[in-house]
Length: 292
Image (tube, rainbow, N blue to C red):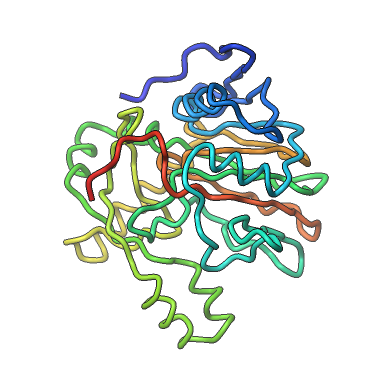
């Protein structure tokens, strides 16, 4: 069962976790992410991430090297992203720059890369330069969403599987080379099938595992009933009771558990520029190995 966070503040050694909402999110004090993490602090951050699902850090001037070292302390670093550009000289650091000439393409609730057979464990996002107003990011706890469902819904969803594919990334491939490029990408990237309800390998919480960007259809259903179920579930994610919202500042860092959260980047700042850098972690080094 998903339990609401207990104490709004707790401290282990010199590291403090300040809960932001009753469901998910904590601001972390007492850690310099620019320096190599001690084994003890890496374990503390990992436990905090499991508990709070998304962690926020202020005034962290990460270099590319320290950004990658932080990711490496938590898991295996993802190879280059299939669509987005990377920081020069650092192929695993995605460069996310949005402005009037290059608007963002992620204006919906989503988990990253669920069209892969094994989606990423976590992401580390650093704000390089943010607008004076706007550009917030929201996260939603999918374990809290699941627990809010009636027993009937939980029973009906338990056996279901859903197909995920590259979704709106089709637009990026179309701009590169039209329909032929979409077809090539679909063949290359492929699809994945995931249970609609998953179990977190560390916390044991059940969570809802569908998202509007990449979930296309529930298997063994025709499109109409599948769409009705998925749309109902997507509406639950939009409830503010399940969300936390971050107001970015330059050098703010967020780490989130991609397995059990979704996120939404608010595009309300154009024509100003929003410059972010992200490293994605593919495998959780500390989680029990899952059978394929």
